[in-house]
Amino acid sequence: MTLAVQHLVGGYSQIPVLKDISFQVEPGELVGLIGLNGAGKSTTINHIIGLLTPMKGSIALNGVTLAQDPQSYKSQIAYIPETPILYEELTLKEHLEMTMLAYGLDQEQAWQRAHDLLKTFRLANKLDWFPANFSKGMKQKVMIVCAFITNAKLFIIDEPFLGLDPLAVHDLLALIATVKAQGAAVLMSTHVLDTAEKACDKFVLLHAGEVQTQGTFAEIKANYPDAGESLNDIYLSLTGVTRDE
Ligand SMILES: Nc1ncnc2c1ncn2[C@@H]1O[C@H](COP(=O)(O)OP(=O)(O)OP(=O)(O)O)[C@@H](O)[C@H]1O
Image 1 (cartoon, rainbow, N blue to C red):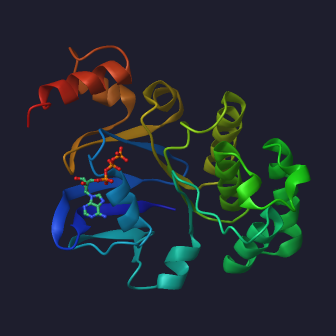
Image 2: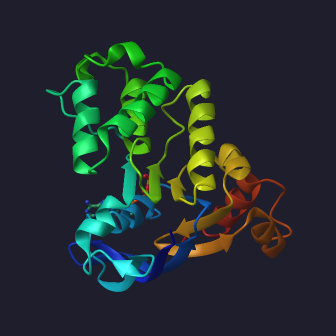
């Protein structure tokens, strides 16, 4: 699955927050979407998942836009929001059943996957629990399990690292590696740059609604030879240059 964002201008109520954004996520790639608070990461994600409509430019999955085939477009995406969105009146089991129905999954296969994932994320004995009984991290894990039981070809993960314990971060990265090996594309927004530097194949650095730079870590480092050794250093150096804009 290739996600292609081309010359995207977008935002809210005709305010163009994003100004001519272009990047691709190829099959088997994990791309890190990096940027300061307000840079436009969530706005970009909201356009990709179809909550916002491009004012100009296009977003396509293997060449097909949301407008061309909404059902196929949406069924190929699994989205894990930064703030878990759960239904207070549904149990964990019912959330999984709802996901299986929404994505038209084979129940037997999906439950097999679900049981493995529930065990990994230590939720196996909580199938009858309601969201009110879960901690923030546990709610995030429910969203992760729901996303990874699907056959999505594009995973969009909004800031996964801040609410998860180190074991869960490790397990999530292993899951991402598995879906990448199966040809899925993964776009992840994060502020945790040391983890991103190790995990991501490529980076898109957003600043004030524009792509400041993009590429592999080696490419970005080569473009900014004096900016530092780590992604964190380079990022701080780049944002320092533009701090007053
Ligand atoms: N619902 C909204 N209506 C109008 N403007 C918005 C809305 N949500 C965000 N914005 C504006 O869009 C710009 C980009 O915000 P966005 O949420 O995409 O940033 P972000 O990079 O995800 O930041 P953060 O790291 O804080 O999550 C900001 O200037 C913000 O004020």
